[in-house]
Image 1 (cartoon, rainbow, N blue to C red):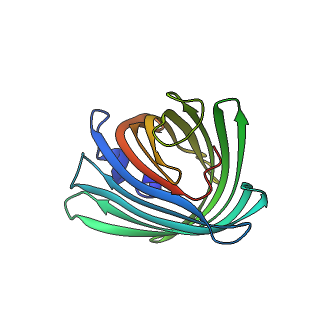
Image 2 (cartoon, helix red, strand yellow):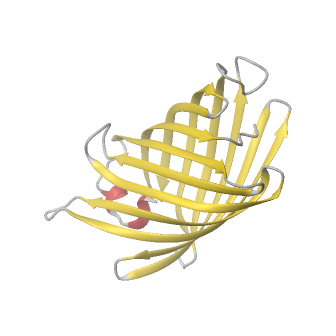
Length: 213
């Protein structure tokens, strides 16, 4: 998402450590209908130097019980641009996605396929994203309250144009199950843009009344 404008990757060196603070979740609002939400405050440094503010939400439908979810959503991104004349740029996105989950013993795997239509100042873009995540409980056999767990994901972004590769994100973290509906995680995210790379601290709170793993 930092690729919406060049500033985030180009103004930060590979030695910079940024930080993303995230609240995200899913709430079942009917038998197979799910409300999804995602709020992200992204900084060039640990706190106070805004890079991006992302607000995202969508309505999904489960093709099977608590799984195989089709979703239609909207996202708003506010990008802070550093330069001789600092400014802020807005981006609007409409997106469609499919999410499916698998379980192999303790290991819970999620696959997410997302197609975005991006509307920015003076241009529009199309982008595909593939997200693969793994959650593994460490202190207990199941993801129940007071469980410490390992979380990781990789997400690749592909533009629908000549220069196809947009970015890749690789994340690893330790999490804690606070309650049946709340989990918290803290870890590191490596963001790769072509020849440029950046490391970020990522702190996430995940809420859901339909945790399936």
